[in-house]
Image (tube, rainbow over all chains, first blue to last red):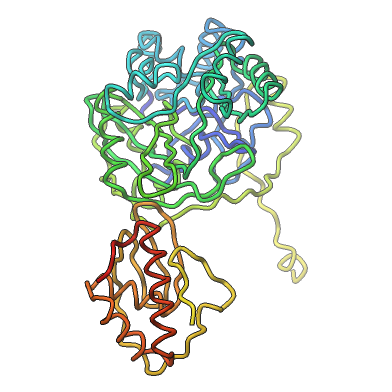
Length: 367
Length: 110
C-alpha cells in the first residue's frame, strides 16, 4: 500500500443523468483534502475531469463494460502498472457485477473496496426484489423480467398496461402503448442487455434513502429525502431531508436482511393519501449522485466508506441530517483545454498540472 | 372571510382577507397532525418533506384543534381575533373543518 492511500473513483460525468463519482470525490476531499484521487473514465468528455473543485489528480480511460470482464481486468492491470491505487470506489451499476463476483481478484491486486457480497448483491437485483420484499414485509411493485417482445406485451397486459420498462442496470421509461413499450424494450436491450424488466407503475411522491451498511446488518449512517424537483427522465434535481420512523424501519429491515456491506440507495414511491405505504422501487448498490449533500450536514458517507474499506477508525461520527435541509442541483459550465482531451484520447491518461495563474486585469493595468 | 386549506401554497397575498380585530395572541410554533406550523403561517412536515402556507385564520383553527378546543371555543377565538360576523365565521369554520376531515387531518370536532 502507498504511504498515503491513493483512491480510484469512477462515474465522473455530471450531465443530464449525473453520475456519482464527482460527488464522491468532493465528499472525500471535505475530510481528507490532501488525498490523491484518480478517476477511471469511460469517455474523455466526462465533465468531472474538467471541474476546478472535484477533478481527480489524474485520470485513466477504462475499457467499455461491453468489451467484457477480461478486458476490464486487463485495463485495470495496465493502469496499476502506471499508478498503483489502494482503494476503488465504483460508482456505476454496470461495474458492480464483475467486482462483487471477484473479491479475490481485487485482493490479489491489493485493492481495498467497500462492497457487498455476491449473495447480497444478487438478492437486491431488480428481478429478485419481490422475494426480498416478501421476506421483509415491504411493498414493491409487481415486476416481470422479459427476454422477448411477446413476453413484454404479455407482462404489460398482466400489469394493467400502465408500466415502466426498465433496463437491467439502469434507466426506466414509462410506456402506455404497445409501440412505446417496444421502443423502450429495444432501447434497454441495446443499452443494458437482457433481461428487460416490466414494472407496474405506482404513482406518488418519491423518497430515497442513502446509507452505508456494515455488512453485519447495521446501518452506519443514512439520510432520507423526498425528491422535490424531477428532470424529464425522472431523476431527482432537488431533495428535502425527511425523517419518518416508518421509512427508517423499512430501510433497517432491508439492510439487515441483506447484511449489506457498503454504500446503497433505496428508492421508494409513496402513493398520495393518508393510507399510502412506501413501495420499494429498487436498491442501487452504490452511492447516488446526491451523496455529497449529506456530507455538507456532517454525514459524510463516502469518507466513512473509505475508512471502512481501509479498516480505519472513523474520523468523525456520522450525524443524522435534520429534516428541512434541502439541496437543489445547479448546472454550470466547465472549461476544458484541448491538450487535456488530446492526452486522454491518445494515451488514455491525464495527469493534471497546476493551473497557470491568470494576471488580474485591473492589477496588470495599474502596473 | 375564507379559510384557506392548509395544503394550499399562496403567493398572491389573498390569504389575509380577514382583518384583524385585535392583534392575535402570540403564536408559538405548534404541531398539527405531522406538520409544524410557524406563527407566520409556514408549515413543514418533517416526515414527508412537504411544506405549506396557511392563512392567519386557518392557523388559528389548527392551533385550536391542536389544543383540543371544541367547535364553540374555536368560534369564540376566531370572532374575538378577526372582524367578522359570527354567522360568516361559523359557515367558514364548518367548511374548513369538513375539508380537514376529508384530508384525514382531523376527526369530527364537537
